[in-house]
Amino acid sequence: MPIVVWQLVFFVFPLLFLLLMSFWLVKNYRMVPGFDSVNWIKMYSKGYFWDGYWRTLGYAGITTVITSVLAFPCAFTLAFKVSPTVRRWAMFFLIVPFFTSYLVRIFSWQVFLNDNGIINVLLSSIGLGPFSMLNTFFGTVVGYLTLCLPLAVVLQLISLSNVDRRLVEAAHNLGCSTFRTVFAVIIPLAKIGIIVAAVFCFILSFGDFVSPYYLGGSKPPTLSILIIDTTKSGQQWPRAAVVAITMIVTLFTIMFTAIALAYRRRS
Image 1: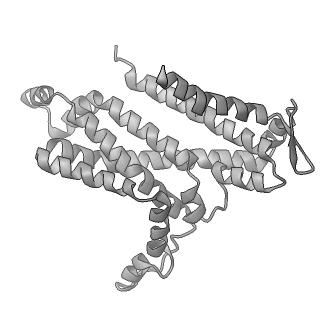
Image 2: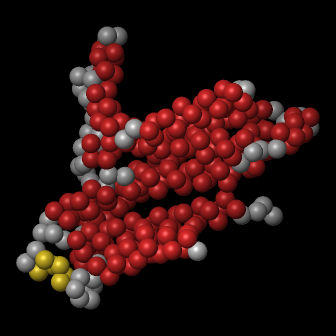
């Protein structure tokens, strides 16, 4: 019951209010209650909205793939190649970044990525650069990785640590190489955790505002930036609600599809 009440108060009711607000109108910079689909029609007829939608979807998808690929070797090593003591310390250091503000960590990346930053200074010392990394897609991805990578490693590590070692030994006894054992035994057994980690990465990067704004330059805008721009343009909160609901529906669709795939049993 407490969980149900929590979900109703802090998720269902605000979502219903957001949906209701998307049909309101703005007159003289003030929202007027009503029921008109003009906000949906206007936003869905704008090319910049769909450009931002597909851009945000692509950014989140690319980040999810990169994060999952980078996280797996780390999680695999911690789960199978190190002692329990090292694993516990690694878990601790993976959680430490969450002790500080995500915004502070993003601002610190500006020191590294700008044209006169630490990375370009080091590259120039060997005759390379300078490379433009700030206010680019690369900068946005770096910010997304800062947010998602530690969490992905932790979630994958928990899943890989629960893999039955007897099945891994059986695969080796039957002649499987290490590479084949990973893809034929370990990944199928840990796929729920791997897919859940990927879903978390997609959700966080799809809705993130900080990285594309401070490291990506905010132009061209993602949907989260488009929400801010829309609210500043004539107090158009109903149209911003349309963007937000579109994002939520997209996330729900991808999330339920991924979870269904994770728990699907092989025939």
